[in-house]
Length: 146
Image 1 (cartoon, rainbow, N blue to C red):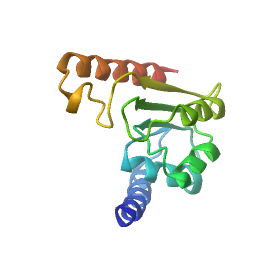
Image 2 (cartoon, rainbow, N blue to C red; image 1 turned 90 degrees about the vertical axis):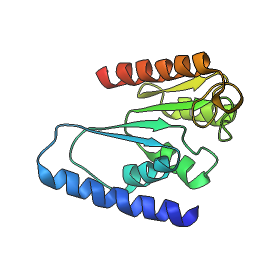
Image 3 (cartoon, rainbow, N blue to C red; image 1 turned 30 degrees about the horizontal axis):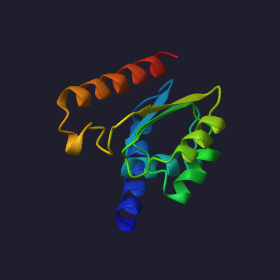
Image 4 (cartoon, one colour; image 1 turned 60 degrees about the vertical axis):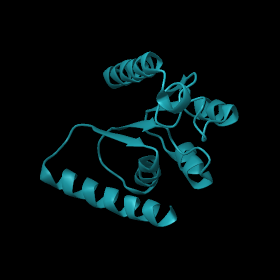
């Protein structure tokens, strides 16, 4: 896991550099899911860009203390999405993130959703899972419009 996280961080920095070298951008939106949030934390605290940056954290690995500290330090407006059945879900972490991002972000907690944002045992509640994804998409749409 640690080796994958290190490689993901390296790859994300290389990808951002390549992307930003292509042309000027007015805004950068980073979106990461699970392991990808480790790369986002690294990018947002070490990779400086001269444009507004927004972040969408899908099922962030809140149990990773380094990532939690990077989330605390990051200043980019952010949307966090996590389910109550995600192994990384902890109401104390959610409260902390809401406090850190008051006025510059939001946390969407989906009742009954697991790490894959599926609802029910292994996502078996198809309708509940679709409704959860609808919640996520609506939250992302509202966040990107703000």
